Length: 325
Ligand SMILES: Nc1ncnc2c1ncn2[C@@H]1O[C@H](COP(=O)(O)OP(=O)(O)OP(=O)(O)O)[C@@H](O)[C@H]1O
Image 1: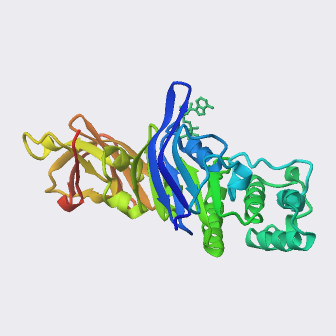
Image 2 (image 1 turned 120 degrees about the vertical axis):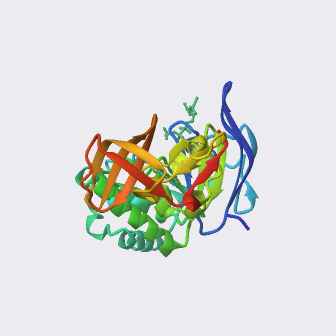
Image 3 (image 1 turned 90 degrees about the vertical axis):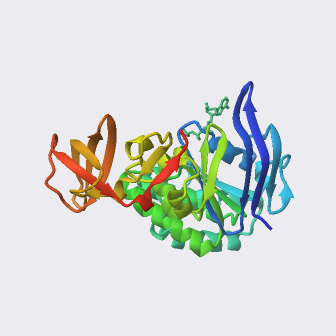
C-alpha cells in the first residue's frame, strides 16, 4: 500500500489555479522531494497533503485512506517548517513533548520518545535550554525532533534548511538523510535547492507552474530529463542550450550539453571566446561565447585561462541531449 497517493489534485485560490492535475504515488519509507522555482506550488501541495489547505478537486490518500475531509491533526502527519515555529517560553524538552502531552501520551512514554529523538539529533545536552539560547541549526533540529517524537506516518518538511548558513545546511542535510535511514520513515521534502533535491531524494517531483513536469530518481532526471525545463533545472552549473544547427545545418532542435561534459580539445567542433573564469580550486568554470551563445564549461582542476582567450572545445556526442524548442 502506498504511504501517499494524490489523484488528479487541483487547488485554486479564487480564480487562480495554483495546482493543476497532480497525481503522485509515494511508497512507504520513500524520501520524496518536491522541487521547482519559486511560486510553482510546492508549499501549497505540501499544505494540501497536510490538510492545511483543502484541495479544490481530486483525492488525497494517506496509508490507503481518503483524507480530503480529515483534519490535519488526524492525518498522522508531522510538519517541519522553515521558520522552526518553536515555542519561545518552553525549553527544548518541553517543545518536543508538548504535542504528546496534548495527545494524552503517558509521562514515561514521552520521556522515552524525547530521549530517543534527542539522541538521534544530538540534542541531549540542550534539553533544558530555551530556543533563544540555541543556534539556528540547533533550533531546526529541535523542530525536527518535535516531529520525530510524534512517530508520524508521514513527515512533511517545508524548506527546513533555508534559514541556515551554507555549512550548516550541508551538515543538517546529512543529519536529515541519516534520520530518514534510522527511522525508515516516509518523508516529503520541499525545496527550491537542486543540490538538496539531488542528494536527499529517492524520488524527485519537478513542478512548474502548478504541474508535474517529471518524476524520477535523481539520476533518471539528470540522465534523461523529459524536457528542457527539467534539464535546465537539475545540474550545477546548469545545462547549456545551443541550436542544433550549429552542428548540423537545418536541424531545428535544441542541443543540451552539460558543462561537465565539455573539454578543451584542439580539434573540437566549437570555437569559443572566454568571457569570465571562476576558479573554484577543485574545478574551473569557464563562461565563454560560442558565436552569440553563452556556454559554461566546467573543467576539472585548475586552469590558467583568461578572459578574451580563444578556446576550442570538444564533447562526447553521446552526452548530448536533444529537445524540441
Ligand atoms: N493563500 C493564498 N491565496 C492566494 N494565492 C496564494 C495563496 N497561497 C499561495 N498562493 C499563490 O500560489 C502560488 C504558489 O505558491 P507556493 O507558496 O505554493 O509556491 P512555492 O513553490 O512554495 O514557492 P516558494 O519556493 O517561493 O516558497 C503562488 O503564486 C502564490 O502567490
